[in-house]
Image 1 (cartoon, each protein chain N blue to C red):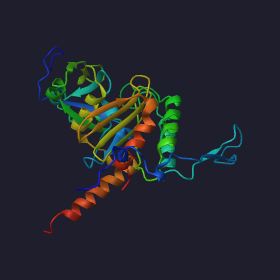
Image 2 (image 1 turned 180 degrees about the vertical axis):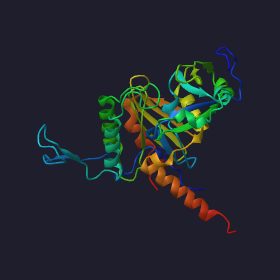
Image 3 (image 1 turned 135 degrees about the vertical axis):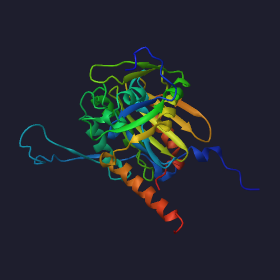
Length: 164
Length: 148
């Protein structure tokens, strides 16, 4: 008979799975691009984040450039507040080792961060109309949680969300 | 010409455009699919396949002027089995326009996203990570295929 496995094993992320611990803002890159005036341009650096973290932030920034009707119908512009909320959430869950999420715009102006792996479908929606965390476990069960529990929910599923 | 009040047969294709940023890679199923947000609108615009057929139009014509978009399809019978009502709502620029009306909680949106089939998958405009995973999956499939 094998050793008993604590039920906590599945919900406590390993030590290396700590959220991004240090993000710093680097000195203004004033000469970036062709800009010669306007506000200073800073760069956020998070050296201990997952490798996909920077690209994900760029994707979120890119969504804010979508114009009204971007989905081919009547979608709204992506709201800056939701882009910031999504970026802040990623800062808390970009554990080293975790797989890159997909980042999609929502027609109501929101942003959705999602993982589809490890038998899980996890969607974290930052939006006006239907904000929250939706988790479907293909081994059984669906769960909906408030956004305030989003980061802890991702941490609890860390073993099944590891990148390959 | 199909009248606006004509019933929508169950086998009618309901087509919906998908912006490249709405396409995600599903590692569970090993394929790309539309994100669930595509299907969230309680009055979701679609294009009715029977009208397109009646007008002798190919489904791809729905993407005219939108070369980076993809096109997915569900059937009327399927969405009706999920407590939705399909309505013909022709507009000046598109007689095939219709709506799928009804509440769409998250579980239902996810079901629609997993069930929808690509009629057009515009690979040239996919997000790089989605395209890379598609190519990787295709290469794995070739490796696994028995030699001829």
